[in-house]
Length: 80
Image 1 (cartoon, rainbow, N blue to C red):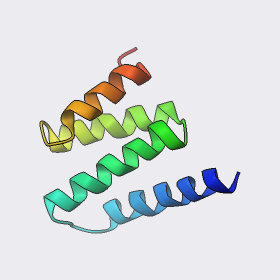
Image 2 (cartoon, rainbow, N blue to C red):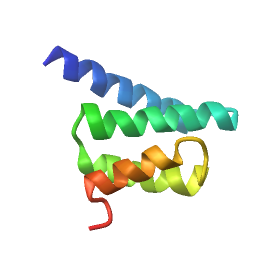
Image 3 (cartoon, rainbow, N blue to C red):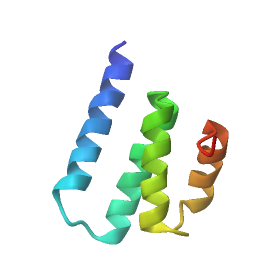
Image 4 (cartoon, rainbow, N blue to C red):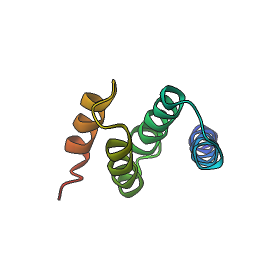
């Protein structure tokens, strides 16, 4: 239970940090990727992960995490 709580808090903090400031693109991309993986893998929140990955792919396109993000989108069934 505490383990999931730590991940939920981390997701909140990352989402807040991304909304709050203008970060260098590379920093924002890493944080965005980490947030998506928290939703998808740790919190098992398919709806939040799919919504986040759509925004991530629109914002960062074919960045270094694109293949992993697309694999997660497919695994989660976000296209359905």
